[in-house]
Image 1 (cartoon, rainbow, N blue to C red):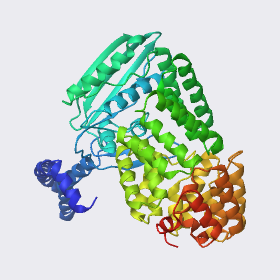
Image 2: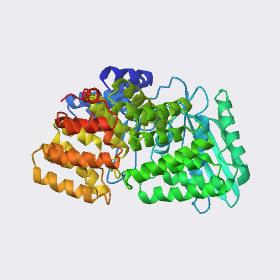
Image 3: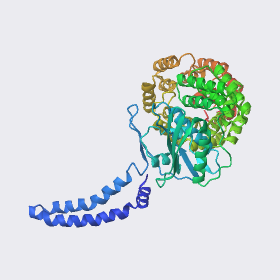
Image 4: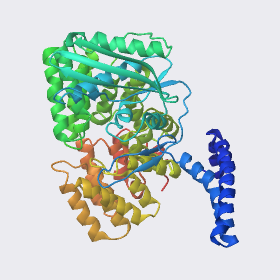
Length: 554
């Protein structure tokens, strides 16, 4: 914040008037002290210094303490995680429409074993409210990121750019459920509405409707549609919530466990379309990282098609079907149709915007990609995945300032990058900040135990060929049975082993690597653009070479 903004902020917070009051009081106190000090035979220059310090000290100390007060002015402190004491300064929130964030509800059950249920209730309310016209709802990943963080509601609202926050708790004891919900005006800090409900589990769907309508009424909005009933079976619904809980984790164990719960839900209620959507989602995140894409995306497509057969309005299922068409069929036009349908159904959801931004970026359609990318960042400002992805796309487009901002935001959200590479490091490398890039890659490696392909690329750029080759081999070994060929090819290109790079890219084509579509715009592959074999691969995956190569000129 510059000096002009600093002074304006002090004026807005009425610090000036209070400081003047202290100035007058400080002067009177100083005069009294000045009368007493000569009795102790203290030199006049010391007396004058003490008077000045007292007079100026009061307002200066007050001004600084008010300005940097963490409970008022947007300094978000998070607990020590992985030896990190992260502090992020955020601007006060400004929202152009009525907006809300739904925080994960606290589990107050006797055994503390219903976190999945508490989070699931919050997510169901979020899903219902996201369908209300005139209401902007912060995305799940951003809202839920604040779980167990040391941040008050004003800070959370500022970070998510919302006016209102809904928080609550769930107590589950057998078949009885007690839910407390509270709607808070984050700007004024007062409760607008609160209620406590006690129900049997069979009444849980009606209860969600009741809470949704109470919030909409309090905000003086119109609920044009009724919230979608997740399932007629409460047993199936509970399995679904557990599947949803594990599907938002990043480990292979959690993702495979989510599949078990979604399948159980379908056994109890075969018409439960969202369980099929959940299966598609889990297989999508298992793909490439833990399972070969040909195997995983075939399951993604099957589950997405089944979900849409039951409910054509499943926006997320359209997203996953689009990804299956893009990767299994190299059909970018078909994928675009499905992505657009998802955005039409749920224009303010993260998946509906995140994936179509990637599609347009890969095709070299810069303007469309940026529209959806910026919309995603607005919807989901505290998402590690969105910020990390944005860093990479902005880098491809040559937007260095935006790339740095997104990359640093991702690093603040999660400096560990346990299940991905910190793409800010790639940006540092391309800017010539090699030491910063290496330090960031190694920081992630110490925590995750996995070496980054980007570290091998960085060593190769520095002509440290032996270290580059060793790092590449270790990175492949750390990923188990499957490694995308295009990831390995990145390193070979920089090592000028172009034949090896082409061989790996051809393997990636045969195995349908999901990230292969980015070879056209990635600057690392620019040295291959004159190679007919490379151009052929680009064409075979439904890209136009001239168009995608123009994004990042050689």
